[in-house]
Image (tube, rainbow, N blue to C red; front, side, top):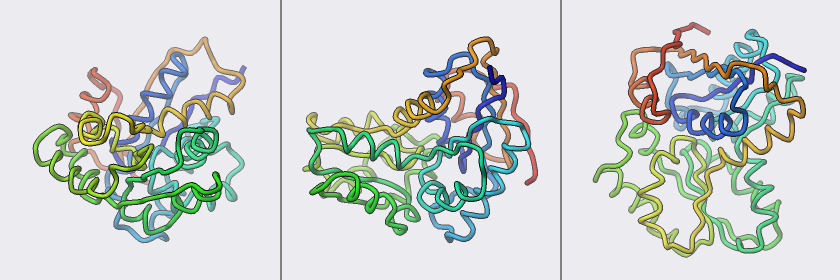
Length: 259
């Protein structure tokens, strides 16, 4: 049995929405979470910078002796996952592939919307991956640059968030499914559900990532203590307050690091 922890990496607090799904799938596994809060947000950054940040994050997690890494960040997945998968031998799971696999097997989805950061949409990774995974699939995409910063501030259920999301969804109401392509976006799920038709499936890729990780790790460690260890590259942020809301508990093991 492999007793090493699972590693998770995001630009900020949004990756904790993926952590929740992974924790549900692996209740006893120890998990190391790295939030690159110093360089948040990733969305407006160049591809070269995002690749550099992602490599630094992965190398830090490898130094913590993790046995698999989840890139719990839509932007880092879209810009860097192909590069880092070629560089490191450790299993690395991103947000796009598990989502595309799900879309490809769903007979009810012929038109899909993708909401993501500016960097993710500009990269074209979501659009091209979805188009290749299912013949004839219609893909509509929209960059939502305001949502991740609002999530980091805890503005996930107020009128500003609602009006912003309504604007972003202006031409998305005819899709069969809506992919929340940034891990911060599930924090706005209640608003998405009220703003979209009830027939539209709201897809949280974190749930699909957790299932993919389960299939990758056949030797789940059921004897571990289920610890969560959090590292941030900058502690002068609102991470702790938002994290408490996401996880519904106090966090005691948070350390600031320099990478």
